[in-house]
Length: 181
Image (cartoon, rainbow, N blue to C red):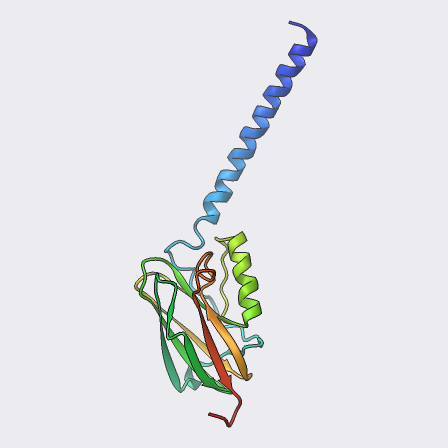
């Protein structure tokens, strides 16, 4: 056996070992990513809700919610109702029910924010996220969001799980200026 053949065999063996090591390291990463948006709920929220002003409002105080709005989500990639009207300054408790057989979520935001987040969910479908304007609901269960709409305008609620937003799982929230119906 000459020296060139020995070097080729050594390089081939080194490349094989490197590929095997990379594959072994990647398997746990893939397994952990696959758990985020399964039919298992996210970890329960710990501590008080962080109230951060968003373009579409701020986390509300449940004691101030004068109205409860039931929202259904289904595997047909639709919400019921698809349009919700509130008044500026109103605090609403959304009771979100998953009537489907797969995980769905209810996320309030602007059209631009939801589209951006939905795009990220396509790239990273198993990323975990938990904000006061989001409810992740397993099949047959309900979730709640209490939100104060302190800004007038037209906003959106959507399911941002990869493929759901793109399948039309979007609704509209119209916030009428204070003093208007």
